[in-house]
Image (cartoon, rainbow, N blue to C red; front, side, top):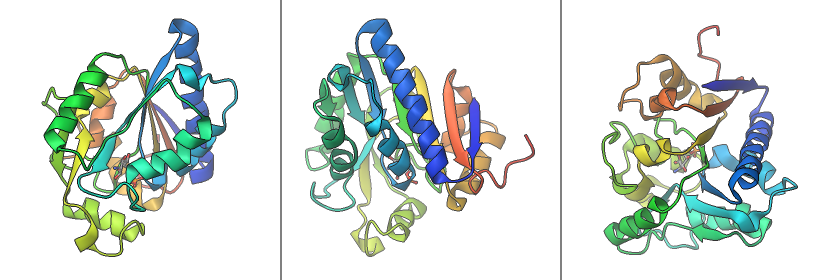
Length: 246
Ligand code: GLP
């Protein structure tokens, strides 16, 4: 794994956005199109800001898939990931080849199957991901399902994950945070040719340490990234602060 430790979240996101842009350009040059997966959450603010402003990417050749979404949260809710991606990425880059958002208000199993069929028709070039305070990858909270072959699954959100969303101001109380979500599976994320993870902030320090210094285990879902052949992890000094000397 390539690990970069920058001064702060702005620098980490800048580098991550630049790396993702370069991998997308390479895919378009080599095969004429690119497929990407986008994550949401506070950790992706700077990364998506940088990526959406990059020059020299023909976005009409790029297909986009969406990592995770709450079940039964109205599309207009401030915490909704569709709203987030529309405002912070889709509307900024202009028309993409295709946009495959997760409709958390549809029948969840049918939505998982619909998106699963679509993503199975393509090879994902670049996945942008974050890591939650509880070590989750997408919404695969510990202990995560490392075995399912389904590309998307319905997951129950654990207490720490839901509390993080309140602490970050996306919801006013725990009662308001949905209990379930549709998440891309761990195996599907790992099928991506390249993974760009942006994980800034002191609140992530323990999760980063577990991701890198524990043996791979579904109790630390992001530790699976150790097994990926081309993963780039962008940290800042705060999120890297518990790591052993490297
Ligand atoms: C969040 C989102 C994911 C994101 C990850 C890290 O809960 N569901 O899309 O990659 O978990 O998010 P955050 O930046 O909020 O910690």
